[in-house]
Length: 239
Image 1 (spheres, rainbow, N blue to C red):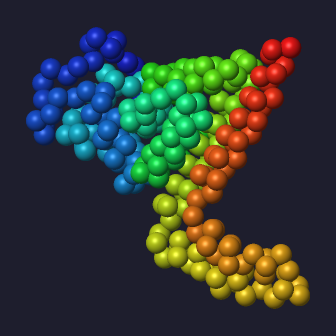
Image 2 (image 1 turned 90 degrees about the vertical axis):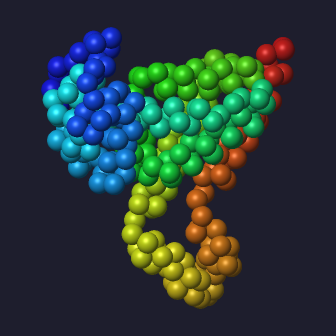
């Protein structure tokens, strides 16, 4: 795609495409998300997207300046889908835990797009809403502004990193995933205690635990640390 773009008010296509649908930003983003999951972001092209929509590829320039602009819109769409199902209750720790788990689940539902979105800043409506909401939860809990930003940063990066890590694993062929899981049983569980005492002592726990994502445990550790910092800051604020 190039840098041509039509103002938002003029973007809506008046005539249906060859498949009888009317183009919209939402339709294009949803179709791009599907194609990314089927073929990968590198394989997404204006030609392929136009073919999937039954539209002339040039018509997509009415909605997005560049291919990168479209990819950012796809990343923002994933954020929006997570926020749609999340409703803060006023319990900051429960709310952040719920949001983090929803972010992780959303990444696993769209593994290829999640890897793409894990390192991009979209600056779009859903991301802005997420930043505002998370900071609101933290500031409402009583975290000082510098601490709220620090915890927000760690919380989001942790969720995105684990989402990308687990999404990359989920995107592997089933045979490859099974082979990796078997290593813990076939190799680590058989190491002798005289040469590898710590692995041998914890082998059964390694076999049981390493087959699952560490994100829920990592999230709880982060929230534990945040709660401890909040408790420590409370007496200082009263002095």
